[in-house]
Amino acid sequence: MSKKKIIIDCDPGYDDAVALLLAGGSPDIEILGITTVAGNQSLEKVTKNALRIATLIGLDHVPVAAGACRPLLRPAVKVANYIHGESGLDGTTLPQTDRRIDPRHAAQFIVDTIMSEAPKTVTLVPIGPLTNIALAARLEPRIVERVKEIVLMGGGYHIGNVAPMAEFNIENDPEAAHIVFEEKWPITMVGLDLTYQALATGKVKERVSKIGTPVGQFLNDVLLHFSETYKRSKGLTEPPVHDPCAVAYVIDPSVIETRKAPIHVEYQGQYTSGMTVADLRRAAPADCHTQVAVKLDHEKFWTLIEQATQRLANRYEQSF
Ligand code: PIR
Ligand code: CA
Image (cartoon, rainbow, N blue to C red; front, side, top):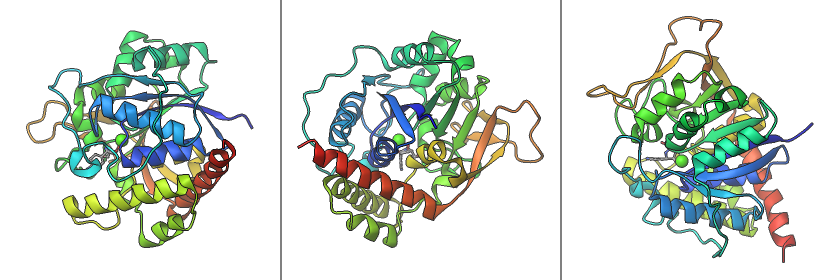
């Protein structure tokens, strides 16, 4: 079976880091590029983090391109420093790197990559605000037809985190999210309803602490600090590890149950701006291009992450 080609658009961020580990360590995935967007922290910081994570896990050949430093219409992004800290990855240790970023804007990189690969072979995996994806769709509308699918972390059909009905990635740039959801490419929305099942439980953390390799140690630090900040800001000791859920679905769709439903993004509501309105009242119409993630196989999910981390350990050690 040929590998699944993906572009990860991210804002690392603790859980983005886990998503990169999972993708980088999966034998079924080929990462064509990593693009960054301001979100959990400033564009400068998340881009630096992406470069350093790529170095840690041996993705030296994978281009990293920086994108939007702010939302399309709204003022600068509200960063999530209360969760991810001032650096975006506070408390973790990553190798320094003098690697250069790709000279192109992330949106241009996404367009170039999708247009140069065979039709319907590239999957976009956005795990931050959707600004770059919206820009790419406007820069080259043909990518909408040409992409295989979009599997994104964002939104939720019943719950929000930064507002009663809004999730951080959508709320940060609702106009961009609106653009993305109204285009007719196949979209799987892996929202909070799903990611609140991806808890880093005590058992999970114990398994991770036993891996004992450099990448295992990094993952251990990530889960530890993510747990601490989630406890401090939300009272949860077992934090939901959002972003790798989208990657896990690309690797093995049987990890997540989905349901087709029309989805629209509210970007004008007084109390509901950033809400992803999914119509689950009846069976979706035949031409529906969107679906929501509903149920996670927790054991399968964490096994994928554990195995990916183990594989990366080998690669990392061999490079010395
Ligand atoms: C996680 C995030 C932002 C805010 C909080 N409180 C928690 C980031 C994650 O990286 C993920 O992509 C998404 N935004 C979850 O809302
Ligand atoms: Ca993220």
